Length: 342
Image (cartoon, rainbow, N blue to C red; front, side, top):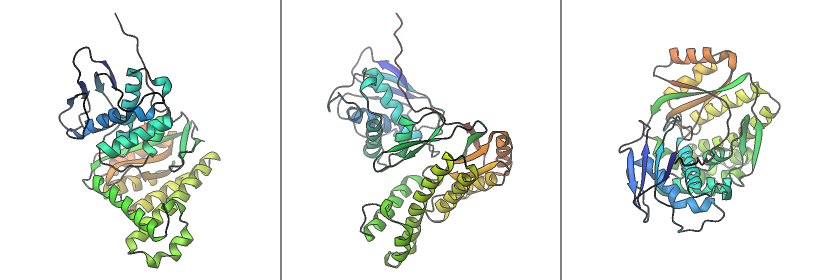
């Protein structure tokens, strides 16, 4: 997101260059109270503007952000489950921080909280904070192990030059995505209440299985089993990366996908097909869906010398049309201020 203070007028003007964004791709909004509306992509911008003060240490609620003009460009596929909304939110926050000379007074964890609140209020999505946190805090050559309750972080090495992360976009976006995330969240909250817990974070597998008969139905058991087992997998995966045990890490990725498919039921045939194709390739350690599900992307850990073969197998075997991104861990979002030319 790039722009500047508007030379004249008191309304802000934002343009997105993404052809995947909904129309219109240009919007002006005034200095008064902001509310959600159309186009949907602009709600993320307005939400961050409304909550900008929460991520700074010296800006009070109600402080006026000057009218600005900005352009948004992105290479992140929209709706693909790879944090496109969090990327826009954090990019917008950093733009505003640079615009108002607040880059030195931001707290990155509070930036993540402010962007999460923006999504809750303006996009009506009760998302967690993982996407915003990694977008703010990511470091090159590392994976981020995040405690979403305490916001404690641990940077786990992922810097082997012989490895790459292959992101594959199924280019499928099922309409269930928006409604099913809140549904899964409600299921988890219902199950936690059954066990008299604030969160399934505090539930272990033995307690879950011993108390399963009291759950309302088998669906709640499956949802809960995914959460409990996924937390354990995440901890084990971080330990595997620390010892460079990529085979074990890959097995955990595969198990995670099976659990997301069978217990949490958020995958779809197209994504399952891509995962199975990737898992069949020598040199692939593991593959799974990523994001909210019902389409979007898969993520695959693969050796650098096998990535072209993996792409070939997935492209030729997939019944749809996929897009591939060869990725490496990089730094999170940062704001830049450019000197004005005369």
